[in-house]
Image (cartoon, rainbow, N blue to C red; front, top):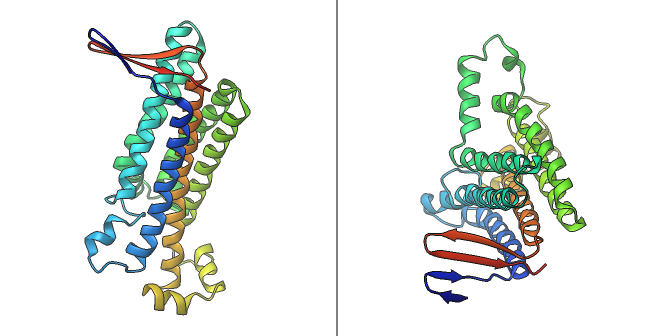
Length: 276
């Protein structure tokens, strides 16, 4: 780190940063799964507030905080890419493409933190859904309302970023992240199916695995509740892991620029040296 007058230069080794982001995020995600199992669901604590704190399916616990924060960091990184691209080639359409993706993930961070699409979907289904196609939709109403737009933006993100990232490792990270999001949405669809339907796949799975004894003895829940909870746990973990993969892919792209990336604040200049 160099200091000159009012200017401060900070050099970050990007290779270490990328490995650190991946390892730390994955370690946190694994820890959330274990804490949800042992502390929250298996009754490792007698204090309800502690169990709620580590319940990965709740909005007011640590996992519910980590997911939106990670997505917001991804969005901010994308805005940094947009700023760099805007300075390098301001007249090109690629600048607008990065702005679209940055806006999408910034919105997803806000949405994930506030559960915006779930709540709007529930309100729409309750007050407007009678006698419409929402009446016959088997899962959560938000999917019918928001999923087409999310799918369109997801396809745009994949196609545009695939072209821009260029290298094989970055593309694999991107593809893995998008695949995680698709799987998470699929699990969310299954979780929203009518629990009273005998053809509900989770109810059939619980019956087929003969989970009655272990679910009652170990968790004090019905087999269906056990399967549903761990489906939600897997869904949230996969979604967080997908965000991690996309974030690392974007950081790799940012690091691939020759020379330096400068961030200017009032009286301060931060410089990151690309080492990949």
